[in-house]
Image (cartoon, rainbow, N blue to C red; front, side, top):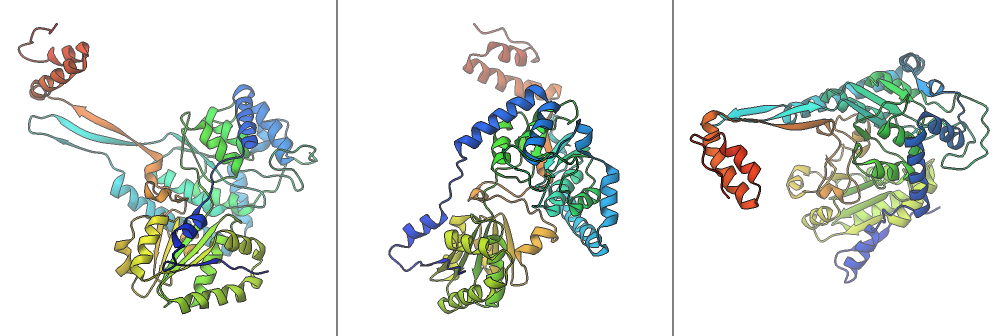
Length: 460
């Protein structure tokens, strides 16, 4: 099996067309999925727990007489934590400490209430309060992401959220996960991942249910007799989950609709080629639609990275997925300079951006758009995924141009504070009344004027 990312050069006359073609990715969801999701959401909204039980049995092969059979307890979390190897316990706790430390600093920087009084005694400010209850979707079964649980639950805790409701599918082996029928309903305990449950213990999840898919999103958004209605839903999922999150937005908040994972490496040729090749693999192994791109002004170095790809690919357990990703969406781009590479990076606005250079701080000021920026050869993207501290839930598909990583601020809301003094009402009332009359809203104007001394006559 070979992986040959497309080779491009900014010197080529056809670079722009080839570059745009390589970046193209359609986020359109299949119409059949959209309709199925709409039906599931409507059914859960109408029938609540009964619908959730039916879909969990149908899609995950997980049969239960009531939602009590699908709820995980704090004892389950603690038992899982105690059961995993000591090295995993230590790694979870170390990662959690770093993630919490980073988000506590983030809260101090941007998440505190503030106010001031102007010269006439009027108080103006902002009150920052946490959401009451959030829902976290954690992929389950064979695809288990304890790191995503930490990255979603810990900033919510730091923000002050009191209730964190986790949903995690635990399909029975051999069941049909996305809408088939005929699964063997022989068990009420599916493929639970102990590391995920242990992470729930470390992160302080309040309640958890072994449900997934669009039905889990619906249960969180609308509430059922058993599953509490939440204020916001965060966390990754498949096309059904993404479609459901889009549809319930407005009833609840959501974090983002994420596309395939991405990595962009800006390299000056000073980093070992094997390191960069493996960094490209680290995103390509997620799925065939993931995108890995190298930008470098050194053609010989690009050749060395391709040689490393050829040599290292056969050693990868997920070699087939990596090859499909690199062949379908990967690119090795020769640029005229590092400055040009930075400019192209800003056009791409990647999810993960590695500055693999001896002088990363020379180039960082030129980089405006990225979900996370990893500075220097020793800062592999994978460290950010697990334990560096900053959140790994990042904007994809170019949305880093206008959106940010998941953070404490996503679990808070802001209320404006206004307390107008008597003196302030005299100045502000005249301004407000004039503008309100101009808009034809007489009641607005009179409400301001009645507080003036003396009260002016109403205008016709």
